[in-house]
Length: 332
Image 1 (tube, rainbow, N blue to C red):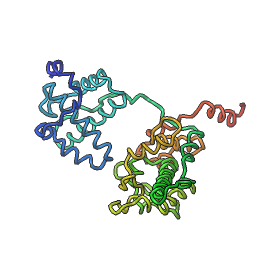
Image 2: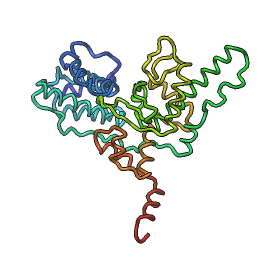
Image 3: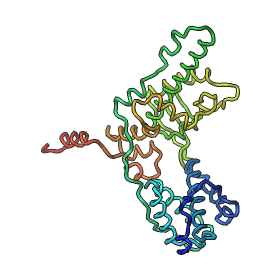
């Protein structure tokens, strides 16, 4: 394998654009592994399968006919190869996680006798802190371009009035989307998958399906509940069409269930700074912790399986550290 590894064609990097042949997928049992991954989120499943397909192609060029030919040295060489090809630390870490999941699964199925990925090290992902929006940025994002006056002054008859009505409906939708992302700290995939049965405006809660098919019931504040109510009662009926999914809370401009790209466009239109929809989740968690919320409560709200994942949000500004120190230290 060593000689084969040295002879691999580096010009065709991992996942070099070619579909994994059926014979390769069968030898590595990628279909069965994909079935096992159904308990994960769709995004994780797609990412892990893509990572495994890329590794299988690379391993084939290195002389591996199947998983039994893989050892820990080869896996370490593969991760080093990815780093030399310019992959980000976070990407390499995710690919290593995919390999660990695959070989742990393969060991349980008897596909391999020993798990070569045990204690396989990988980059930590770079240790980047989440992007948190400032209060002024959040105010512009949540308050700007609202529906007030969206249909006023739109002369030109019935067609212009219809356009103005749809514009006002989309503005109501955008308000509800942004308020919910920040109020509940839900993932974009959870927002897009939200059904009308999961919205309780009286109790001010939303029920979402998170990673690993785990359901969470989350509280929202009054302003978020009001934004959801206005969208569902005033905006959604204007946008919905005969083919619209009746259970979907949010609809896009094609009257279909809102998708992640649609959410990204909404954030891009409203944010005063370059950002990402996930930044609202980061901001919510950080602001709760800054306000004194217990870390385990934030863990529950975010749907993290491990408290270690939530701990990334414990970073606070220097001003916050000084403020707490001066208020709490007996001799400050």
